[in-house]
Amino acid sequence: MYRIKQTLLYSFLIVILFTNKVIGQILPLSENAEVSIITCGTGSEIYSLFGHTAIRIRDTDNQIDEVYNYGTFDFSTPNFYLKFVKGDLQYLETSSTFEEFFQEYLYEKRSVAEQVLNISRNQKQVLFDYLNASLQSEERFYTYKFIDKNCTTMVINAINKTLGKKVIVKNTKEDKTYRDILFPYFEGHFFEQLGTSIIFGTKVDLKGEELFLPAELQESIKTISYNNRPLCKENRKILEFEKEEVPFSWWNNYYAFSLLFGFVIITNKNAIYKTYFIVLGMLGLFFLFAGFYSLHRELANNYNILLFNPILFLVVYFQIKNNRKWVLYSSTLSILCLLAYVFILIDKAYLGIVLPLIITSSVGLVKLTLKNNS
Image (tube, rainbow, N blue to C red):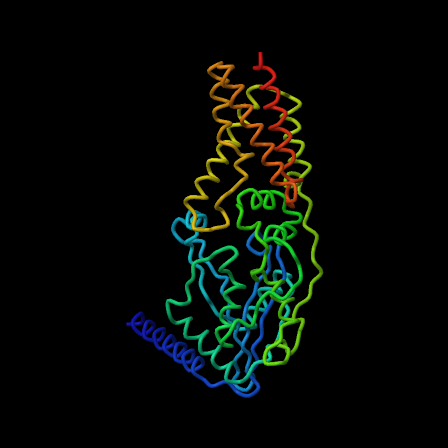
C-alpha cells in the first residue's frame, strides 16, 4: 500500500512539474523580456576547446530565466564513436535555468559573456515559442556536422529564422581558411592538433566564409546592424577568468614527438622502419575509409594519404620478399608522393608539426632507394 501511495505521489509531482513547464512555455513574454546570445570561453577538454554558444531568454516579470543550447550529446549512444566518424551522431537541443548554466561554467572556470539582442517584443515571443515547441518535438534532434551544424550554427539559424532573413552572417575581414581558423584552438594540445590536422581533407582548406565558432559569432554580432540599428544592444560579462596555461605534458608535445622519430632515424633498424611504415600505411587506409564512409565532408579528399601512404605496405612486403626491383619502384613512388605532399603543405599551418614524419619517411625511403638501385 505504501508503494502504491508513493507511486501516486511521484506521479502527481510529475504532472505538476510538467503542467508548470507547459504553462511557462505558452506564457506571453512581458515588455521587459530580453533575448541574449551567450558565448562561453574555451575549456581544457577536447569537446570544450572551441567554446560554446547558447540562447538566454530572461523575463523577470514572469520569473523566466532559461538557457537553450544545442550542444548536448549522449556518450551512451550505441556505437557512439562509429556514429561520430560516420557523421550521423544525433545532438539535441536542451534547456536549463540560467542558474544551473551559470554554476556549471563557474565550476569549470570558463568565461561567459552575454550579448543582448535589439529585437522587438513580438520577435522575442516568436523565438521563445519556437525554442520551447522544438524542445517538445523531434525537431530538437539534429545531425551534428563539425562546420555546418553545431551549437553555434544552430543558434544562428534559430535567430535568423525568427528575424525572417539571414541577418547574422560573418562580418569580419579575415581572409583565412577553416583550417587556419581552427589551428590555434589546439595550442598546448599537440596530439589533438596533429590528429585534427591530418584527418581533415580539402573542405577545411576553403575560405572560412561561414560562422561556425562561438568567438567568431560574438565578434560578428558586435558589428551587425538590423533595421538600421545595432543588432547587439548591450555587451555584458557574466563570468571572467584569465585563460589558464595548459599544464606541461612530458609526452603530449612537439619535442617528445620529434624525439621519437629522431630515435627511428638514428637507430636505423630495419625492423623499426618496417613497423613505422606499416603504422603509416594503416593510418592511410583509415583516412581512405573515413573519406568514403563518413558523411562529414571535412574528411573527404584527404591528401594526407600522400604521407600516410598505403603504398608503404608494398615497400615492406617487397622487403620481406627480398625483391629489390620492386622495393626500388615502390620506394621511388612513395618519395614522389612525399614531394607532392610537401608542395601541397607549403602554405598550410600544420606543415611544421608533420615535419618529423616527413623527414623520417624521406630518410628511410631514400636509404632503401639507394640500397636497391644497383
